[in-house]
Amino acid sequence: MRLRVLAGVIGLVMGSQAAPVKLFQEKPEQITEVEPGIYLVDFGRVAFGNAELFPTIGKAGGEVTVHFGEDLVDGRVNRKPPGTVRYSKATVNLDGDTFLFIAAPPADKRNTMVKRNAVLTPKEWGVITPFRWLEVEGWPGRLKPDHITRRSAFLEVWDDGAASFQCSEEMLNQIWELCRYSIKATTFAGVYVDGDRERIPYEADAYINQLCHYYTDHDVQIARDTFDYLMKHPTWPTEWGSHMVFMAYADWRHTGDKDWLADRYESLKSKLLLDRVAEDGLVRSSPRQIKKGDLVDWPKTERDGFVFTETNTVVNAFYIRSLVLMDTLAKAVGNRDDSRHWRSILVASIPAFKEQLFNIDSGFYVDGKGTDHSSAHANLFPLAFGLVPTENRKLMAEWLSERGMACSVYAAQYLMEALFENGQAEAAVQLMLADGDRSWRHMVESGATITWEAWDLKYKPNQDWNHAWGAAPANLLPRYVLGVEAFEPGWKTARVKPYPSGLKFAKGKVPTPRGAIEVDWMHEDEFTISIKAPEGMKLRLELPMVGKTAGVFSNGRKIKAEQVGARWVFETTASGTTTFTVR
Image (cartoon, rainbow, N blue to C red):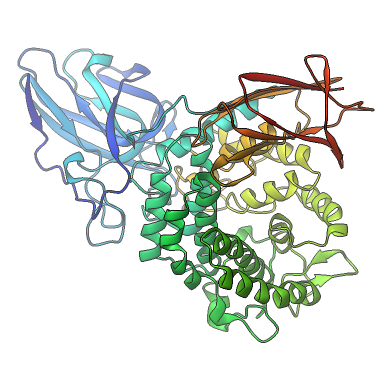
């Protein structure tokens, strides 16, 4: 069989290919003849790629039209999909017994041409597009699975067996798989990008991607390459700069790599908003920054009525959180002078944040100085960042859980963290599973195979359907339901702190740089957990109490554990699989 590339295909060179990404051949899951001579090819899930056709009928000739789509309407590829949902068409001429490569769309000046700032894929790939379905017209004879493949772009080293999650709620399992695959599918560009509309990295998107990637695969390079890219190509939202500090901190916690951090530590100072700090220790926003810069949430309709003022509560919450993390990073690289400096700033900023922005009478933060409006955002971010007075955390978490999903898929990462860590774990899970159109259940039941940019098209009419910043459960479920987190940088000590969240059981595998941690727990009259971790890894277990618990037992022997709140806390060293029971 001769090899030929379709004439006229436009492929473009990526300025610098970051993490190693390659095209993988995938066979169809199903081929259906929808009309005489017209075949619908279903690959099961959306991926970024293009298609290859393999004619096998002698001197096959004639014109073949291929329709590529993310959406299906009445059993056919949707030719006029909404928003930035993709459809494209390619027409090729069969030329005897020839291998054909088909690129789906013509080049697009927004995301596949040098004229724009999009991250470009290698020229030899040809143009790629996100699609699940193909419609093929004009194929000679019957179209069979051996005649067609999808060339799908994924991170070359991605390991589908690196992570797993399963629990007693089947919909939650489907949500986790949707989010896990979303992270895999959106590695196509070699750095984290914001979906297909622009194909450029954004800091907040990248941070959520990074957290999810750590819990679904072994690779750390794509997060690092994205960090370096964003230091050279920052974007415009005010709070996005803080996410660069968050990304560096996440890398430090996950890898413990002091050398990588030390090389980038100084550059993080430009992300701290220090030039906007007033004498009272809080960040100020100019009218221009209020108009375009201070974001709070996106799209605008997801801000829960947030009132923008000169002193913005959300902006200042990010500012203070980034300083807290910079103190930790300064210590990590051995810069004691900087550590003292960051703490001296916090001595002024943290009290000012409470005094000027916290409403003592209501027990909630207001949106900013000069307004008495308290949005969900003015409270969920401070609660997630540990800035809420201890005595007010319970009330605030309950209030936020009652408000429901009053934020976008982006801010949901922080809302879920705030709820899990402040006594509302079951409410957090129920928000993931909620009926209506503001939950991950809605995405699953709508047939999504990659998470969306927004909860629904009605909230963002131009949204795309391949946005990994909507994949937060990929990190939230293993972090909180399984309970697995790095307790010391580089996973020198791992913490296992399960939040049962109303579930009867949960089990799964979490990848770490030192090897996988496997957890399997059951929660009925007793709480029983089995843990398998890399040999010699230190483990800190914080297990939930059950009823009038007497303590923690293993192999019939009572374990020495300290009661801390509603948990039994103890440390051990991993050796094989160990089972503990709280009774």
